[in-house]
Length: 421
Image (cartoon, rainbow, N blue to C red; front, side, top):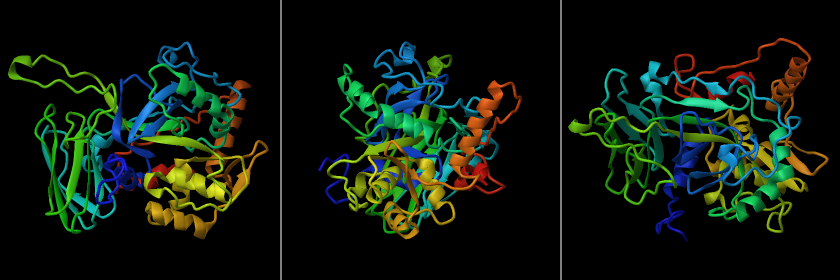
């Protein structure tokens, strides 16, 4: 088996462990290798794929093929305005995490921390304590920004139907593209993301359940460092300034910030930010290996939560294809402790969420009620129609970034679902 996916001892690779540990935060799919972008870039509408914890962009499905960002691969089919409604507002939600430095540190379940990142200091030190054998950490010294196509909801069914119609053409185009590394991986449509200019990430495993991890940043231009106090534990880490653990690869095109010396005090770092999480819509077509009543848990190690939900949908209906979004997963889990992937498989069997299949043979989770994501999405479409008729309404919604506190205490899922209540 590829060592990038599993080591000789059978432990999951760092990117799989990190993605499972931090998905519960409620921000979408965690990227072990954050995707570098210019501050002016916008990932909304990007179509690409995730491999080894890295997002690979193919094109933007909401821009025409002659736009500069699409020239390399082209857009197989421009978006029809009738198929995808206009975003509400500009999609940008300002980050204010620096007002509460303690909210700039994220830990997976079973891990806690002491210390804080002070806005008055460029150096800091954090101490983590874990009572579980494995976990992951994310530190954002400067906070983060969040952008979503539809801030009050997930994208509903329209994005999925658009993907369903063009999916095979997109795959064929990507496979034919010159210098493309695409090998037929599942495509994702980006409907939101979290980005930051500074970050440090770590994941650890094989501890005795009483591990201590230290993290420090010497200055704004020096690499951060992690250390693990556990005799048998393993630690993988990196940051925006450093590769960190030997063997941690960087995505193609990622640029390291220049190092400073006393004689270079006028040198400015390259302006670049990094995408840490993406909200994604996925499609899966039925194949001979995906049969009605198949095992949802097959290939669980390399699947994300959306993949598990797609398997469940195809298992329990005879649709031609299934569609799911990370928002569907969060909706199923919001009233309970967030499950591991194995627990999520059992949760689906216990809850048995209803499935609906449209006339084209595409299956979704059925959502009921005016405050469901699809219900909210329908109201947004009605708003667009009324606006074109001259109605002046303002549905622009801005929410705090993932690094802001919620009612005085940090609860990522509570912030994520505030608009659904």
